[in-house]
Length: 403
Image (cartoon, rainbow, N blue to C red):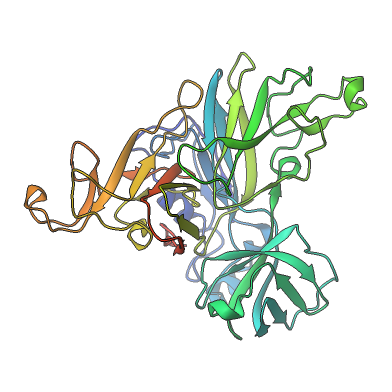
């Protein structure tokens, strides 16, 4: 199947990503001719309050004969690209809604502790510290774990997944982590810095181990043009300040990162990858004091609060004037550095007559019903957990489109 066209700027209430993706998938009753979708230029695609634009393309493996299509009930995952616009003198929040290379799709032939065996033949050490396992069925459906060792017939994960309920027969994928170099190669459009001591654009990564609220970034990185002898005239990614090589720095799927653009003009970055067709989840931490979890909508389509599944990790609040857990939403695009959240929301348990004894999502302060409020595609948000006994809950948002 082929999809052609040009994307214009996003606008509210435009063409839905869900319907676009659906058009990209050849169903078994369609002919090859029916599977050719052409979109006239320019096409307005709605990503609802975000500068990201997506066009989903089906991989070449799905270009099948008519007879193959008639017999096929599933295809390879669609691939596509996302363009993010980084406004000048501003922070842009970006989520990696497309995954890197899917190295393996398999079924666990055995699980012992952190070791997941497979009938597939693997290359020893091939996935060590560069890939993660995403479980797509079973008790840990949607949860992912780093690969720390690879044998010829197994992957060893960072966690004892058998103790968490993973068992023989669970399906999984081995997926490569994005790195700065693979997500933003020299051709990506990221602004290039000449002076390593004064970079014009940076990627700021969140500190996922920090405690408290209003967390600072862990580190920042810039792309150098290779003109400085201080960096051995070598182009590539470097850590701000330390000037150490950062090409292999990983970008993990549970959070967003920030592009801080101070180059003097806007720039676009283009990322291509696999469109998620299974649940992509993550953990949410509670602590003895209030704790921010810096998360991202992992899909290239908006998630409403009602459909987000966040009630599984956000404790409901009985008092609408003093809510405990809150969800803070951010605009992916905007003007300025260290931008504040747009608004915050809580889930009410339905016990208050002030809210007509109606359970649901409400905006903090205004108490406006907010279940239809959307987290944009790849959108940044925080779950601010109220002080509680330290614990870890799992968020597993349903995929908001059908392929």
